[in-house]
Length: 190
Image (cartoon, rainbow, N blue to C red; front, side, top):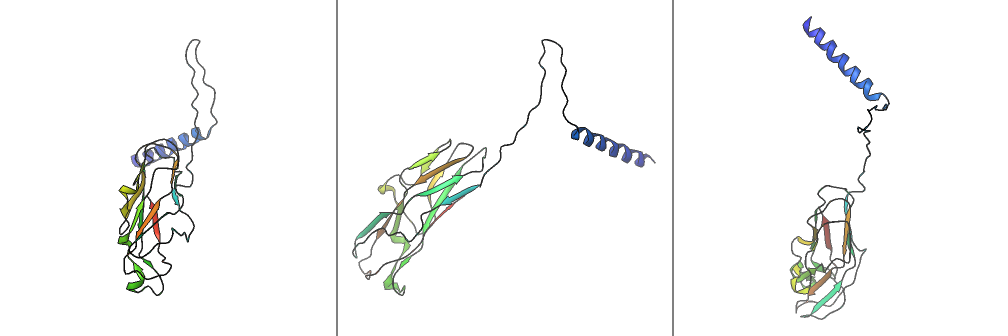
């Protein structure tokens, strides 16, 4: 019997709380010279989340000779962070596949270990925080035989974005055969 009364009391309390929550707000009455408070709420919604946009390909970075270097910018890469997060940090990474021509035999392949990348500085940013280029200049270029940091945001909050126009450098081996080589430069963000 005691458990039944407790269950009924709990159910009644929950029903009263629910009914009160559903009731419209009413005016607060306060004495003169005192603060009379009204609680106000609103919602800030997040957008599309965290995403990265890269140039449409194919993108040609130039022409060169065996035992030479080919270098060119691939176009604007943009990270857009619409999470409206308290800690709005992210890291964009980059890597590359091997580049091949013709049938892709060993003589027709330039390894990704001969492909370098440097982000350069931001071409545009929005929002607050610290935006950090992965490689500010050609001297700090990194080899794309594994995932490397392309750009990052290390502090700040709320929505933000960063754009950069990276340069890809290919060190063409002496034994490279003539042809148009194709590979993929992969960007990601997390």
